[in-house]
Structure formats: C-alpha cells, structure tokens
Image 1 (spheres, one colour):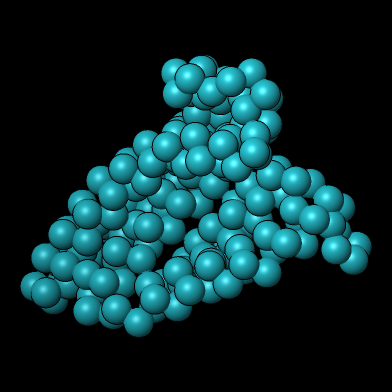
Image 2: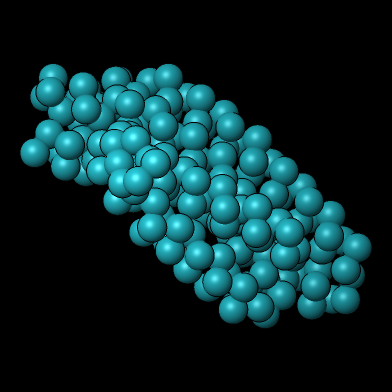
Length: 172
C-alpha cells in the first residue's frame, strides 16, 4: 500500500518535469517547422542542437533540484512517514529521468516538426516496451536482476527514457 501511494504521489511531482518538457518541445517544434518549411535546413539544425542541448541542461538542473528535495515534495503532498520513506528513493531515482525526458520530448517534437510522425511513435513505443520488460525484472528480481522494489520501477523508467533519447539522437 505504501509503495503504491509513494509512486502515485511521485507521479504528481514528476508532472513538473513533464510540464517543463512541453515548453522545450513546443518551442523547438515551432522553430524547427518554420525553418524547415522555409528550406533553411542550416537554421533548423541550429535550433535542434540548441533546443536539445538546453533541454538536456535544464533536465540536469531539474533532476538535481527535484531529487535533492524529494522529501520536501512528498511532505508538501502530505505523505505519511511510511509513504515518504518508500517514496523518497523513488523520486530521487526517477528525477534522473528528467535529464532524458526533457531532451527526448524535444527530439520527438523535432521529428514531428519535419512531418515525421512515425519516428516519435517508435521512440515512445520503444521506451514503453523497455520499461514493460525491465519493470518486473527490477521490481521482483528475476534471474540475475536484484529485487529492488519500487526503486526498480524507477530505474526501469529512467533506463527506458535514456534508451529513447539515445535512439532519437542517433536517428537525428
């Protein structure tokens, strides 16, 4: 019960990162679409580089801020002591995912800006599939994987986000 409550409350904290990611994704999409539509591929390339770079750096800052204040966020959300104890490691690990999430959402928006709707689908689908496979392995500890509980769920999500980011950047 505490683990489920902790993950649920952490989801509310993580919406902060998702909101910030939409700022970068929306801005990059608009600027890349404008430059790409005008045939200015060099300008579009600069926007992509700058947008993904700024999103990555902002993700690092957000990860450090949210991760270091994990207990504070859960207290603000009125978590009981047992829920907070379960949730702090989950938020700290999950916050690392902001690094990949902000940049990955920006990368996906760049593809959409050029009319490519399929690549973001594959990136997001791959991320979900990686998370789906890693979750039970890292939560319950099957085979060579240690049982990490909800920390395993957080690591599965972080790994999945970085897989999508790396694949997206390579595809760019």
